[in-house]
Image (tube, rainbow, N blue to C red):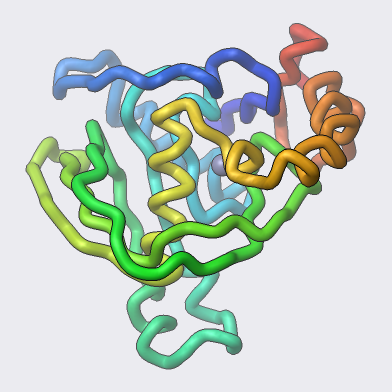
Length: 196
Ligand SMILES: [Zn+2]
């Protein structure tokens, strides 16, 4: 089932999300609905707060990036078929030099901006079978995970822009909250209190 994606301005996107256990109600169904919702919106990642649930869970599938001819062969191989559910993730370490990448977000349609982040991360998380992992990621894969991880901490990529950039985007962001935007997937707008 495709779920409406919560738009910028909804307080759920600002929550520091809470951990879950394997008893979380209808978890398998929720994960399957989140995949469907993400693919329908052509996203490479989706975090639970974006569908209105303030829990520490997000999904990543970087397969579409494997087609990107600007990337090295090694990077494309790493991104191909990387599909994973991250539960109760905790950032252990962020290292390496900062680099800029043009990010977008399904909750903030039509805005893309360069965001600077460190290039290597070590993350502790549970997979969908609640098996623990501690893993290091780098490059674009780390980037997608950092963006989704921010969501479960209540942080959006627009928070990382300069104050000047944020000021310039203010009107556009207000319009997104009001649903004054053309978008080809189902969204829930905080200022409308209804789904469109
Ligand atoms: Zn996002």
